[in-house]
Length: 124
Image 1 (cartoon, rainbow, N blue to C red):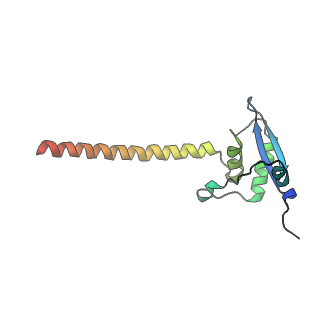
Image 2 (tube, helix red, strand yellow):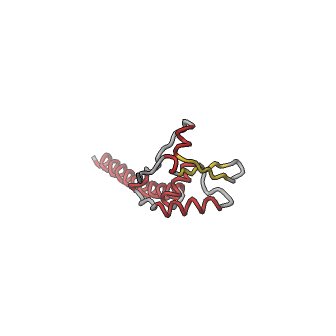
Image 3 (cartoon, helix red, strand yellow):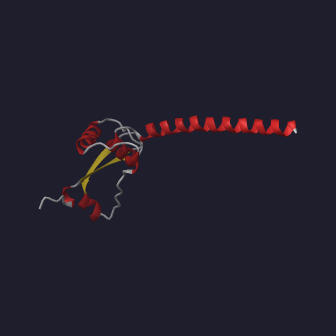
């Protein structure tokens, strides 16, 4: 029987303290189930970025265990960093710059339309 068993699946979580330090928590899937906790698979960005392979994710977790300060704001940011390699807020900054760029284009197009409408209404 080569199937992975719940007691052998490792789950890592991070508890962020108010002073910016953190504690890595390691538990098994069986621990999660026995305590009645909810577990959510965080793979929403797989369409945008290729996820790391298991070895790279384990390397990220190993690096996190040795870090002195927290690089994340919460568990979701930690998972994102482990799975994709960049911090989620860095991705958000890129998304915002795209928003600003396209918002600016939209605003300029709107101004041109408004100016054209005024020129039509005054020329009648």
